[in-house]
Amino acid sequence: MAFYDLRQFIDKLKETGDVVYIDQEIDWNLEAGAIMRRCNETQTPAPFFEKITGYPRGYRLFGSPLSTFRRLAIAMGMEPDAHYQSFLEEFEKRIKNPKKPILVSDGPCKENILCGNDIDVLKFPVPLIHEGDGGRYIGTWHISATRDLDSEWVNWGMYRLMVHDKNTLGGLMVPTQHIGMMLNKYEAKNKPMEIAIAIGTEPATAIIATCGVPAGTNEMDIVGGFRGEPLEVVKCETVDLVVPATSEIVIEGEVLPNQRMEEGPFGEYTGYQAGGKGPRPVLKIKAITHRNDPILTVSNMGAPVDDSDVCMNVAWASDIRIQLLNAGFPITGVCIPVESSGTIIVVATQKPYNSIANGIASLVWSTKNGKHIPRVIVVEDDIDPTDLKQVIFALGTKCHPIRGTTTVENMPYSPLIPFLNIKEKTYFSSANVVYDCTWPLDWEPKNVPRLASFKGIYPKELQDKVLLNWKNYGF
Ligand SMILES: Cc1cc2nc3c(=O)[nH]c(=O)nc-3n(C[C@H](O)[C@H](O)[C@H](O)COP(=O)(O)O)c2cc1C
Ligand SMILES: [Mn+2]
Image (tube, rainbow, N blue to C red; front, side, top):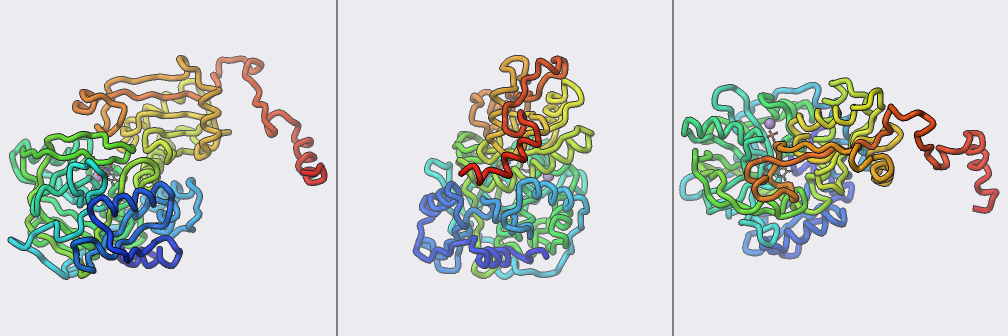
């Protein structure tokens, strides 16, 4: 059964021991961020902050919503110890059958409505998450809803949002992402782009907002399919958009055309404060609505593990797996290891022809999600791509440093990839690499080295005998 709202999800985490309620007063200025960061890196239950310095009780923060696989599993109604592969299979099943949302006339997110002079985003205990961030970020686990200028397409995506002042936000809306594509059209006509930001939604909404579904597809329909039940949405007060009815906080406004203010840097999903400060789009707030005792959801992006390594990268791997299978590649597994901070994807495959690794990589890089991933490691189907020990062994032993790698220049992706230089970051141009960790088919079988492992180099009967006698030997 789907969670009705964020609060039901947090109640469930309480039941399973996956949230810690912190009653001690915590400072929004770095302290909450430091606690979340340590929670992420040591994979503890999620921190729920009850009292923030300078704010009345009732203005709460929920940190690191989905930075453990346990919490992702619970959010999806799966067994908390579900295997990586089963997440991918669940995603595949759930996103197949979109369900349109139900428009309701009222919802908890309308319990308080702030307009005009009452608008102040710092009414909420917005944290300064990392030292050196460009400002306090209110949008780190939320959705931004925008409508295409000349179609009915409404996009729900997660894109960071920094506070400039009480009614002005700034964001990173790059042209390779759907919000950036939409903004380009508005800016060409010098029109403002309406936007609604929903923070603290039931978990499926945020999960789908981190996953690139095709342009022209409404994420809200995918959310319904993913939950198994349509989402209830309400109309906004001042913009022609809808938001989940149970959202904790909704910010309505417009992105001003062709205006820029300095935004960033921010500790990012790739593990570094990598994107720098730069002139970026500006959003003026027209109204804020919120629930009583609102809960601001916060993710602390950075070194592994964070919510993107778990939630976003599972969503990406699942989408890439489906697209590779649809294209007919005989793949047997896909994994974006959390340790890579979203920079490496491992694909295991059968090998019917020699060039399959490059074929797989080309497809990965042509997908919405895969184009963010600069390194593709292709291994054979005897390797479990979720087992880094096996993957590193294959990379070290089977991938020829020259013949086994192919690099591609001038590829489009995010300015947040740490190894890019300033020019590459500014102009969205970088390089990708594929590591082919499969034996060449043109080698004579006698020249293919035999794997000297217990399973690979002893007769099956002998293996069975040794296993059967293992205790008798004295081990
Ligand atoms: C916490 C978090 C923050 C993110 N912030 C940004 C961002 O500021 N800009 C961006 O382009 N993508 C960001 N992403 C990645 C996008 O959410 C992801 O690529 C998603 O597919 C975008 O939606 P779209 O496919 O509808 O454009 C973020 C992801 C997470 C998990
Ligand atoms: Mn989209």
